[in-house]
Image (cartoon, rainbow, N blue to C red):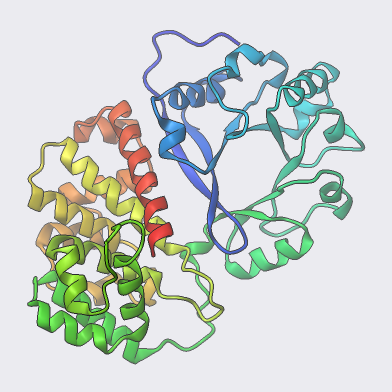
Length: 391
């Protein structure tokens, strides 16, 4: 399985894997158009994971990498990858081969974990030294015996909503991936007063309102107030003495950082069941990567701020259960931000599309090379992890 030469730097989709409480536990690496060879996705992932400090930046997450042809995989190829942070994702069909079973068993003895994608027959998973299964459980569940045969953690993909996660957790899964964050439960009636207050706060932030105006509105929202004070007193700021008032919090953060953290704090509001909002880290990734991409293009500080706003506001329609047109109409936003949010148009719209779904031609059009794009992905995910720990 020799590394291909003269290949362009790979692109990858990073898909978050959450536990039952929506905390990120791993990232699935999905190389984009890696090539036609069986080992192309693995080689692409290997190139990316050789980036300096990649495991430090993404700590403590496990990284799940595709290995389509495990029989050709050599231990020497994994020498740069820490066994306690990497999980090899192997298709179930490949595990029927005796050579593959021996190869994976030897890798397991060396400390590398295997996650079988799909359901194997009989004792095949055990013979491979596999500990976990990865199954598309969007509509159907595998036989219970398939899950109890290995200790896990078992990963259920294709999760369309939170209700499906509950059902899969009861069946024995403990890791989950899918579009559930963008499909929140709308059975309970929306709190109209809270929604108006949120829009009012967003409007104040958009027009850079006075501190006293922000303080008045924050005092009307106990949940948001609690999260703001919790944030300022967290380890992220390492203050020598605790902050107890909104005016102190605003002073400590500064206007620019206050706006950014408040925009994210909107997503941190606890759900009825007390679980954190899974939209929070997604919004943080979009905001941070949008800002980094604009910086890579040589944008000014104000332009970087607008990119951040476009990224963090791009999920407000999901958060508030409103159309983006309604939301934009209630806010005083820069035209470039409005174009990006409504039509994915204009310079910020191009970057927002890149963040939402990577495309090499679109990257070239934006003047960003794939290696620089990977760096923005890394640092955006690192920041999202920090945000999730702080809020």
